[in-house]
Length: 175
Image (cartoon, rainbow, N blue to C red; front, side, top):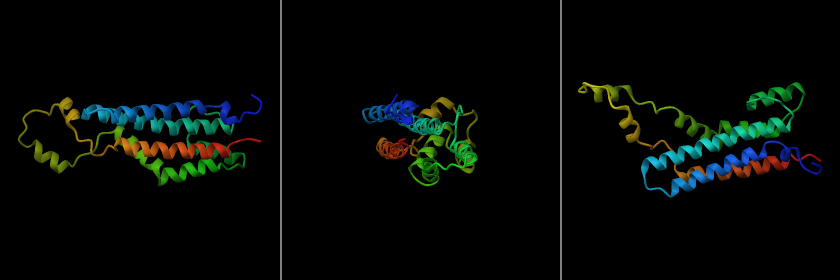
């Protein structure tokens, strides 16, 4: 593999694949008129976008020769500090994860995983007259998806992530 960067040798294909799947999910969301299908496609896009983040962290780990099955930014930072190294890529990702589009992606991902917590006072008032427990399947299908980012927002996050990854990879080239 003479002449190739370490990035080309390790895991870049998985990161790119997740970005591709995100793009496909956004296209599918834009082409449907059904609310539930739209929500499903948007959630799929968010899952792939967050998967891109995880794949890129793994790519960074391989670049820095850190062998971890499921590395985190903290893991990479700790391993590098033991070697008295610093990763500008990890620092940039941590910054964007605290405040930036990566924070938004992570928040949307968490919202997809967990049910939106409702107000207990409103729930109690609604259930006063109910004699049976609510039908959970109907409840899931009829839930509002106002918390879910639309496909245009997800596309914007994807584009920002693509640009970031290209910038970080350019700095990861070995000479």
